[in-house]
Length: 115
Image 1 (cartoon, rainbow, N blue to C red):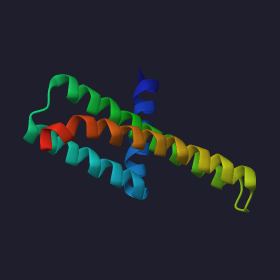
Image 2 (tube, rainbow, N blue to C red):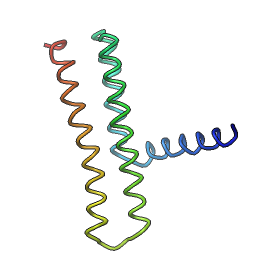
Image 3 (spheres, rainbow, N blue to C red):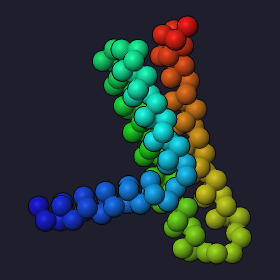
Image 4 (cartoon, rainbow, N blue to C red):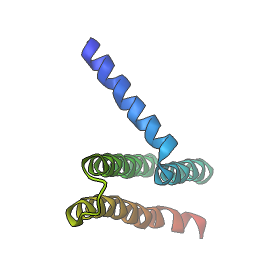
């Protein structure tokens, strides 16, 4: 149980450090807050809430993984390296795909409610 508690402490520390240090994480969390407010105002269904929560998790998780990869690459090399650039670009691309899919699904949920 002690190992689990310690691992959880490290995980929360990583999450909150990413919020403090990563601009894109702040943008994603702002989007989460906006969607939460809109969900309350427009009274979205339970299924729509579940979809939104899953999408929050996917985008935030992808951003955390991207940050971890970028920091690891930075630790390994400070020189410009095409392989390092590729690793960073691919992990950023994963975040982009998640964000685009989330925006498309958000459109499907919100456009009929707003208009």
